[in-house]
Length: 71
Image (cartoon, rainbow, N blue to C red; front, side, top):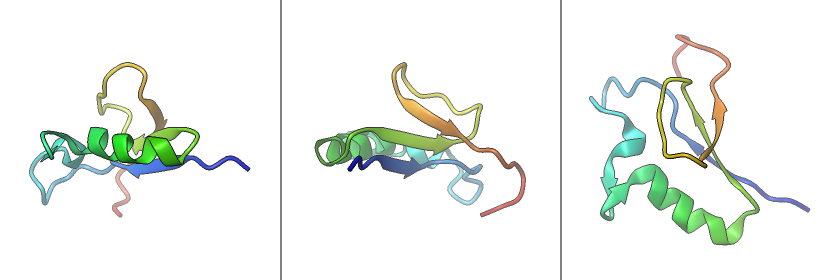
């Protein structure tokens, strides 16, 4: 059986005021911290995000299919 991890990082973060996936968490962007703790436990880690969000090369992403519909 294959188990993959998914980090939910889409949305506009309007209440947060900045991209919530990039918030400093233990000295690194939150998405990197989550990837680091998930990798030993799953086959692959994906980030669910908006198409225009940017991450370093090699990050596996699943772009949001629906836009402007809220949470």
